Length: 111
Length: 112
Image (cartoon, rainbow over all chains, first blue to last red; front, side):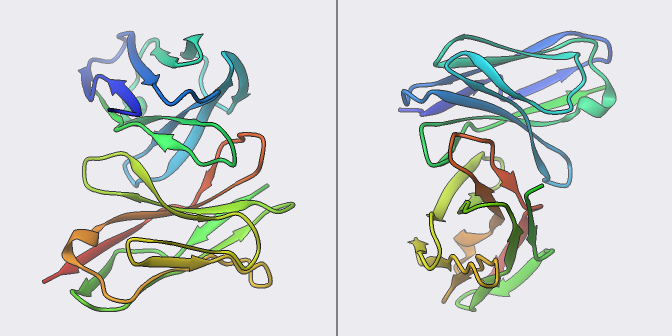
């Protein structure tokens, strides 16, 4: 059973397009996150949701909009994609003590 | 703010060599400390953790001890295998489900 799943695994699109990445966790966790990993493998938090409420919103362009329809899902919508958005995006979830479980990642390539 | 500093890689070792990847941190309060591993093409997996000073986390032959006096959480393994080749991330977190703060990762390559 997959604990944290993301779709799609790969996403290739052109500049200016709008795309979404979906994330689902079946662990019963209350908190979900989106991280961005750049080409040098550096991981940075983008958003954090707790019980469908946004609790962390780092300095991210407002072209990025997370949406949490329920506790088990946290989707990431990106408008007007730019070359610099190319990265691997990871969804994660946690229950307590910060032990976070990560999804397999979505590799976004903007051409 | 909180930060994590890891030794820069890549680290290349022969099979059965001893591994140390250094990690130091700066944080307020008493964070939990973690090592995550990322195998090629995969997401991050929790390797081990320690939640208070002097705790030792261990898993799959890897160990790390939470040293408050030196603000360190160095990862060690006595005998690495080719299958250990991956990127290793040190991270810290506070209670309340706050996001983790990651180091920049250290790539390990083990050659037969």
